Image 1 (cartoon, one colour):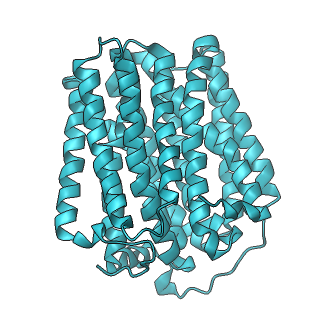
Image 2 (cartoon, helix red, strand yellow):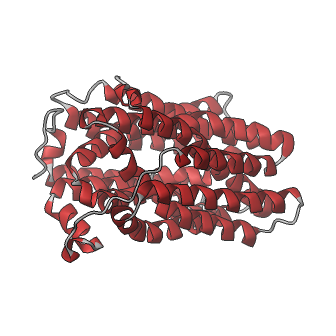
Length: 412
């Protein structure tokens, strides 16, 4: 896979700086999840943590898309990085002083979700200005590698750090990460760009109208949302699976890292297939692989947790599910980034970026189900819904399987 977007000096600085802020995001996800589970020993509270992160993010993302389209995107990212660092600094002090309570974690998680809601639309609409159009696939893949690569390494590191020094060290490192990103963003600031949009094109209605007019956008976004909310959301209750497997903090981190390994591998592989005449089949096949792998994960943790190689099998299933998920996500995001007008980019891609909040929000469904029945049953229920959606969309929009790497027509 070509990484030619890194030839752009400004994008290269942005990408390197994003290692720190994205790494911080991955770490505080791990740290907050384990801290809440340690304080409550409850899957329900893990679901509430996910909701506390996701609901403000989703609500703020809609406003954040408008701000990104009509404001200075670089300045927005600078402000959100500073605010996230301050929030995590407060959590560090509370945790280190042993003053932390569950309600404080939930409150700060909601604040970070609110900040993220303004950060994500600005981020996904900022980087295209740093590259040439022919570098788009490379930049999308690099952004995914950045996100998934940190998810591959840092959760395992976080699990070890928690075991050695407790969760406060995680939040301290996150504070530093956002501070570094803020410093780098200072060098990427540009003057305000005044966009000449008519009043009727300035609202969210225009973005939604564009999505539903271009039916492929609507289908791809819907499929992504469903798979994240009912499938990938199992990572929100991953501490429960780690307990079932008897692996503790280190196993929790390694299970999350396995999903990161799979995502990076899937991103690299799909990058080789963007011009394939069977790209649609690869993309949809990835969503099927994602679902079947999660079914195997649930069966291993539910029926074979005491087997000698159960943990290794669970990690393998988590990795395969992430490979399949990346095949679908990277291909669909590239199609959308190439097709969306820049004047609508913040709003349309902001709506798409709700995808990542739905992982945490889905914990509000899987968490209570896990509390009532078991974590494997909760996951099987969610995956059943994902598979039903794949079948339904495949029947109604059969062209999803026939997309090819040169296809730029969006109308189904």
